[in-house]
Image (cartoon, rainbow, N blue to C red; front, top):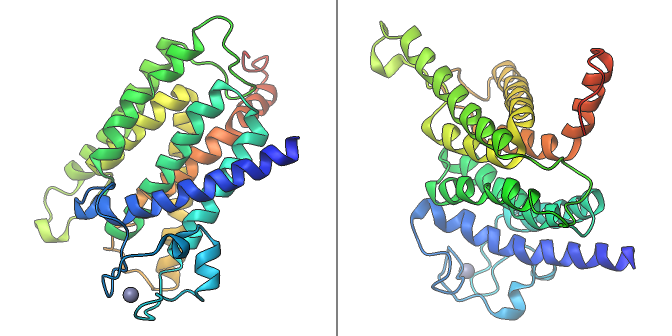
Length: 280
Ligand SMILES: [Zn+2]
């Protein structure tokens, strides 16, 4: 039964992933994610339903458009696979529970943000603003008695939610301002961007969903991953120092790690620092 549910969530994740692909392609272009039907970006041919099966169609078509044979970006099957694996992973971790219903869409939103930021260096308001609003479901549903919340992460109270949103927005905002102040003598074209407005809104959303402890962990892990990537890029000189790194992409990875491994990490931290453990 559990195995069958795992398969179900894999298929669900792959199907949703194909919709995430539409969002990743269209949101930065300010197009509707609902209409018109999907078409090949190269030749404009409508994609037939049989050629639109997540993962399978890409393999069957050999990664090429049926009409014009132009290569289809491997991003499409990659997003579908990632979305499917996220769904299975969260199902295994959270079980059939309210927290799964809340955190699976959150993980899907992170995937969309990660891929759009990597390609366009923006984090669309059309994801982050509704995300901040929807994050209020976490304390709302968590406060209801008799709701099968699930194992992890802990239920958030309204205070934890509010501080999470405030820290999530406040830290990148202050870092961005400090960055601007530190280089005010430089001519504008030489200034580097610190954290942008998009990071502020994205982290407010993450703070709402995960609470203040795990949003701090998200920022820590995201910054660490971003620094490693940046240093590796400089070392390989694939990036000049001036190229803005897609910080939102690393924040999305950090937020997913905080969601899945964060509660354990906090417990472990509580144990080693002798604080008597994190209250569960
Ligand atoms: Zn085509």
